[in-house]
Length: 413
Image 1 (cartoon, rainbow, N blue to C red):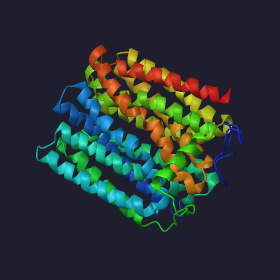
Image 2: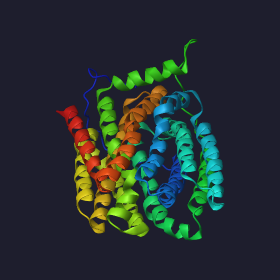
Image 3: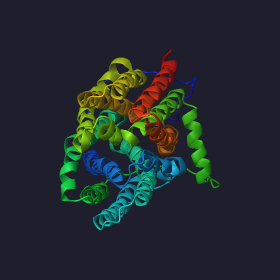
């Protein structure tokens, strides 16, 4: 592959051939293990942070700000992380980042255990963790094609994401209430340990990192970041998909930032109800990992993403209008299946259409544009929940998903 496809070089929609199953040997098994154990720890933190925030304040905007700070670094450092990922040994960058994140989480767990957990500390933690994640995620995206063959990328992405959802839905989310019995710091201490395990697994990889493209004498990080953005914008499919994902992330930011209030407040279902909702999402996403590659073979990657967005819109409407816990759990389950269909095919499309030497920069440009709406959505969700009711962020999300589906439809018409 010599370069990204442009509007004139390739159609936006192509139906892929039958996906090849990746081999566990050759480094993929260790990369999979590192991704799964890290997601397990991250899911413990993701479930516990809103509960900790809600115990510190009842202000929806402050609670939503914790989520917003978790997205903001993508806007500030996302492109930089991609450019750095194309310059360095991705494997070393990943394990080094995990070590740093493990130290940060251990310090935070200690602070919470000593009674020093505050909203300000939560905001700082969310910002720092995501800052390091901009390098880690872009390096991981660039490293995967060096570990598995190109025709196995869809299967590899599906296995990675499905394994992460098993760890999240079957293990992490149900475990949070039990860990909280041991103390408010317990989920964060376990998260710190998972970063260390992930770092050890990645450091043990012996796969060579992809060779970067030759840099001219005057090449700068700024020029390389701009080149990644231009390459993304020159590909009609990736450009349209990044816009659609940005729209959905406005809604996702609003929903995730206020979901704990939606379930514990509007539905009056308590912490157990919140755990049931996020568990349903994670468990159902496992089924989505099985469906995603097969659906793409049948109807194409972009059409698969389009169908997923349409179904998610219906689930969000149900979540925001029916005041029953079982409906919320069912809606989150449907949302989980379709989220996996979207994510697997989105990640694979980026890896298939971007040249290996620019994958870090193109993926970072995609993520930066896509994530740009999430902090805005989180703040809008907090404002909407406070002004019009705790169910309104779900309806706001349904509106942004509708716009995303409409924009994707324009790509294949």
